[in-house]
Length: 82
Image 1 (tube, rainbow, N blue to C red):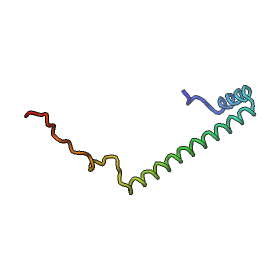
Image 2 (tube, one colour):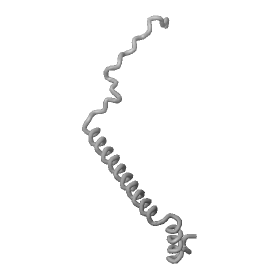
Image 3 (cartoon, rainbow, N blue to C red):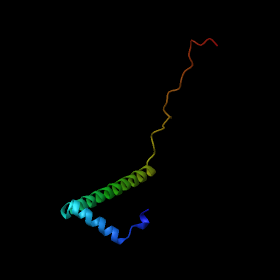
């Protein structure tokens, strides 16, 4: 479907878009899009760096999520007549 689009058709579409939106609006749209992409990339890089930092901290530290050493022992019930 898109294989039939040539350079002439792309120039026609570009001319129509310029006529509708104007150069100023397209310029601001391009800069807004560029800043959004920069923000997204920096957020992804920050998340990757944070995940790497957390994983290296967890390698050296002992996890305390499943510490069952100090759990009380259940006593048998005295009301049991077995």
